[in-house]
Image 1 (cartoon, rainbow, N blue to C red):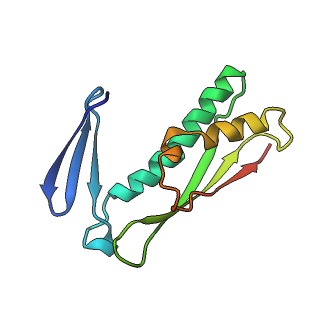
Image 2: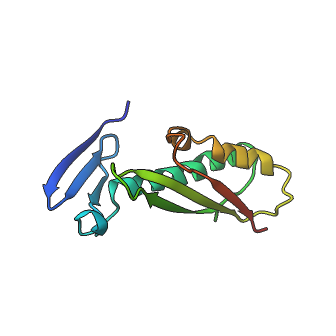
Length: 136
């Protein structure tokens, strides 16, 4: 189990410390929710976690098969609800992979990205669609 220690700093800002590494990050409430928006919001971190997890799991699969996916990017759009309670309703991703569309391991790499544990943890009522773009 990984422990993360978080503290409230005031001004709608929090600091989280990753137990194993000691690395810290700061979150701010977004401007549209009474904050300064000077850093990632907690819901931004959910979107970031989906994007980075998809790339990481895909890279693990790629390494097992001797495929270089360096340069892969994910652009993810986070959509919040307009009604109460405030919540994420959309996490739409575009995964851009610098390999040809006819790559022999395309299905393996796409399946790996879609199987990331963060994406699998997203509630089914959230639109978490993924588009793959192959640019090789």
